[in-house]
Length: 203
Image (tube, rainbow, N blue to C red; front, side):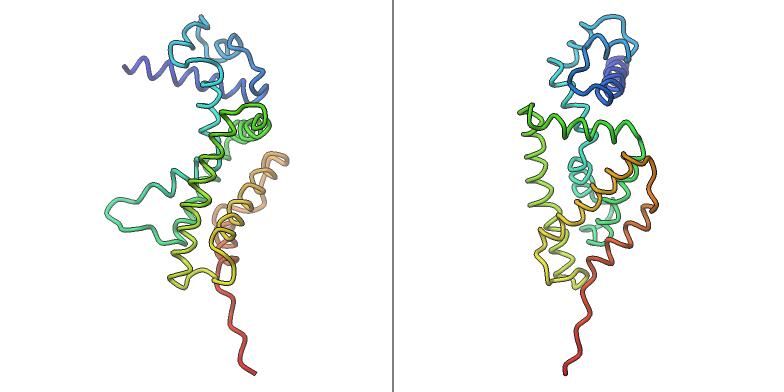
């Protein structure tokens, strides 16, 4: 079993390298070569077809998948994660995943194939519904109820704004190769944007 898992990991690693450069146009032969395996038929022992392999690779680079995993995981021996801590955890995951240039490249290959591949579109739609309308909205609303986050804008809009800013940062990272802010800086700035506005004194 350990050997099987190792071979599958090899295939995914090779596919990630090739898909990041060529997208879905990459051939199975190129993937096998990058994975260091001698026969293309071995790939189909683990994956039904190239489409299923492509989906498996892009899942690891989907920003929505990262948020979904972070917000679905609670630290041991704790209750619900406090809203500011959840935002910090999402930012940390973004920085951890997208520090890898391959993940950034795969992300933009994924977006380029959304219209042409129904499975990719369906994957993103499911993630968007779960993350945006569900998890992020819930986190923001909890913060609003606790007085930690501003109430003057809808929870779903604030959640969308946070993820939109993070995606914009990944785009800049992909284009320029660097970011001027650390994960800590980004977290603090996002929380500042979410902080309740001071009340104007009565005249």
